[in-house]
Amino acid sequence: MNPKIPALINQAVQHFHNGDLESAGLLLKKVLRKQPGNFDALHVLGVIKGLEDDKEEAIRLFKKALLIDQGNNFVYFNLAKALSESGRDKESLPHHARATELAPDHHEAWLNYGRSQTNLGLHEQAIASYDRAVQLNPDYAEAWYNNGVALDQLKRHRESIAAYAQALRIRADFVDAWVNKGAALDELKRYDEALAAYGQAIRLQPACAKAWANRGLTLHELKRYEEALADYERALSIQPDNSVAWTNKGFTLGELKRYDEALSAHGRAIDIRPDNARAWTNRGFTLSELKRYDEAVAAYECALGIRPDDAEANHNLAQLCLALMQFDKGWEKY
Image (cartoon, rainbow, N blue to C red; front, top):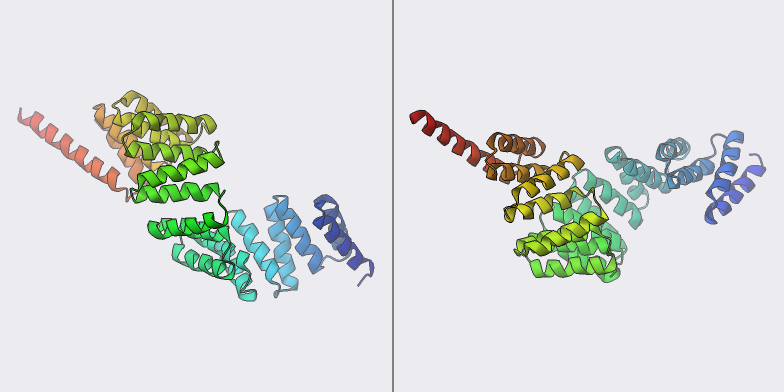
């Protein structure tokens, strides 16, 4: 080995630890020009590329490093992380598995494994990964929070609330945990507690659009419609392209029989996110109330095209079609 190479790598690592990624990268590239198969240079440069958000280059470098040494858990860990952050969760799974196999006590590897499993809808497996992470590090707020997210996906809301409470015991300023706790409390119709959770999120982060939008929906459930509208407006002042806030606003306007305004809100929600099934369902209901039945049927069909098991859309469409059939029969008889 060229005796200068270890010195160059050590110098690059020092720059890396000092936050000078550019200088570190230049030195590592110099090493690779001299020795293209240098494992340490490939690995550390891959980490730098990941931090610079050049995920594809990071993945290429990690894979090349693995051709040299397949027993290093950190390369598997970093490769899996880069793949997941690139939206390639399915491809990341075997690398997460190998990282945790090589280093079963690496709690962050279990967290990342769980995140990819959650993204793929493998919620039971994700919970097992998060459980392993908190067994290794009971004060791991991120793992408790993500555990709550997976439990919510399985409708195990009481358990998710307990997981969020653990995250908040560790990090009382964990805004997302307050918001998600509020949403889980909403699902259990514990509306006053949900309002308190959203209120805490808003106190910590007044510009949290999700907290305002969710709190508005809770106020709607309590029939405090004008307060709900005020919260949606606050959410939309922060994040005008928040499709959920527009959907919720339209829902509340519909309850107030302000149908034209509701229709406009649902339209805005759909413009922002055409796959917003809830907005399509609510649009269908609003159009039905306006007696624009053909358009209502089309809206429900759009909702079901996105989410075929949407119980409300299925019910509303069936009821509307039945009513139209009865109307048609009555017209023919007359």
